[in-house]
Image (cartoon, rainbow, N blue to C red; front, side, top):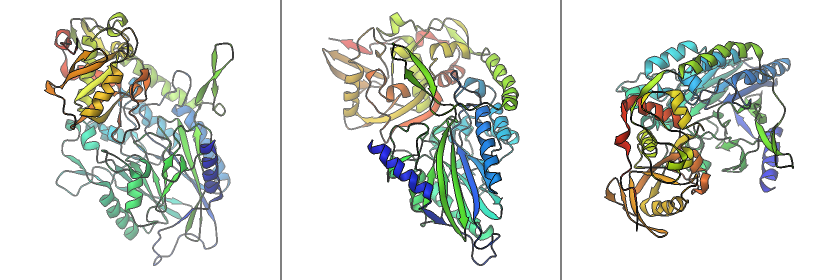
Length: 557
């Protein structure tokens, strides 16, 4: 109830337009707008698309339904004499096999049809080498923006820094920023010769350039940096809050963000709503005169910000997150459940659906292509993986540890759903082992904290789905206690910080594991478990099952 009252209050503030920001037009130039005339315009936004061009198995999100919503809003805004911009916070790549095997071509085709105007370059754009990114730029009918991504040892940017838009005489500048953590998140071979400079100095530089040469009425940053409550970004690079606070008050009107993959709906100043309910009011963050918005992930929402410009002042009149066919489970009262829309059903645009359908079918066929070869059997039978350490557990965790550069890996046996037998292995085979689409994540713990974590993980009984598989950890169990813990054959240092790789299900407290996704050091890589395993297979094939036999992981006394 407390949260409900707060975000109703904050949303009313936004709707009534009580917060305003001032435009940045150079007063020495003649404005292109008329005095005392109100101008209306709307900013729509999405972020962290991650290959979701097609609706999921229960009909949620997908670009065809998104187009229906955007088309309706365009029509509504135009009828009132307004203009509209549609922006993406980046990470178009990586997440759904049917998209991944086609380098996100269907996603860019769909975004063109919807009418995107610009996107930030996300770290997952660099899941591909630059030649493929250049091909994606050719597919896209809108610019990729990143002011802080440079070719090494030069002043040459890899992408455009900004783009100007004229909204009925209101000059809007949109510039892009990419998290400087990309240097750690991307494959080194894909970013060879590229550097990601600190975002705040680059923002200051590009804003000065825009103001000098373009004389804008509004400046928007479309970013892929993350929204961290009260600027507490932990071990990650600074995000949107820190950017807004680091600039002079009112210098930046709006940040359209991504990367942290959360709905930025504030319960109170510097505090997000923990569990945002789709379709309820959403008050965006405001820091130092800058509005900050983010629309969760995967096209689950389209964010909508309606502004009025009058005599150099910009006022936010309304803000909302529009759910795209999101559904909830409802209890029927007789032991069964049904799915219902949080709001109302959005019809899919049939023309776009037909355009995308061949890509969906083609993607399915490509899943049958050989990924690698396996010698021996990787055991995933539930009667094994829920009772003891297994070569499959060691193999999967090897992939997750390599992807995250972690010290150790931990997962539960219930997350292993099939075996792999000797021969050629396809992506479809891997998806049978890891069918849930969990994200590979990591977080940091001190040695002392890791002991506490392991005590909980190892309390899961044999035979349960929570039975813990460990990588790069050996220990001895004495009753309910653990002793002689070693990390990569070295004694555990209680004061040292260790990086732990796992999956988002466990990080959220699944299987009764400690909740770690609220830690400042928590990072969701955005990689599906199966994608990480596929890449590991491709890099290390042929895989020999005997190399992954678990040796003395857990000794009993």
